[in-house]
Each structure stands twice: as structure tokens, then as C-alpha cells.
Length: 164
Image (cartoon, rainbow, N blue to C red; front, side, top):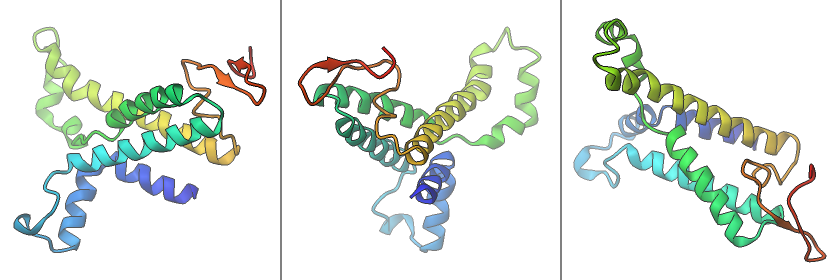
């Protein structure tokens, strides 16, 4: 199962490349394609990860409302983590010149160098969370993410977590 998740996250790291490679391998032309945007790969990956987090939170004892909130949080992180970003822009000589005059064009420097950092941090955080979920067998990994939500145990009493 962990190997499938690693493939899932590898696709999420380079969704645009995987999309175009799959189109070329299948010899699908634009006129015959059902999906014409690599951004849909990002949306589907983020939606699936959010649904997975929702199910894990329900299994861990969170209320349905808290599980939905956690799924939205993981979905937003997934959108950031699976965002198509052309990493070759980091090595383009013109972008390296922007670092010298960063005070004049700070927005471009943030777009070129800040977005991949945010993408990689979100991607790594979600990958570590899923790996911890499978390696430790802990179904409550998503339920224990920050911020903590109250869980209901079998007696109906609310508890916020094992480390209160």
C-alpha cells in the first residue's frame, strides 16, 4: 500500500509532466481527449487525499463536522503540494539575475523561488503524514494534526487527544 502512495505522491510532485507523458503514451490528441488540462490532475489528487483524511478522521473518532474541516485542511494542503510548477524555472539564468535586484521586483522573486518552496514543504508534510499513517498503523494521525479537534470515545465523553 505504501508503494502505491509513493507513486501517488510522485505523480503529485510533477503532475504536468505525468499528464503530458500519459497523453503521449496513449497517443491521445487534443480533439479526442476527455481531459485537456493538467490542472485536473492536481484537483483529483487533492480531492482523493482529502477524502482519505476524512475517512481516517471518522475512523479515529472525530465527529463528522470535525472530519470535514480536517478534510478541507488536507485538501488545501494537497492543492498546494500538487500544484503544477515548472522546476526548470529555478535554473533559468534570467531568474537568477532577479536575485540581484530583488528590492525592485520582489513579487517575481517570490513567485519564482517561493512557490516551489511552499509546494515542496506541503508535499513533504503530507507524504510524511501518510507514511506515518501506514508504518505506525495509527489511524488517528490525521485526527492529531494541528489544530486538534475534540473526539468522542465510546462513552460519549469528549476528549481532545492522548497528550492532554
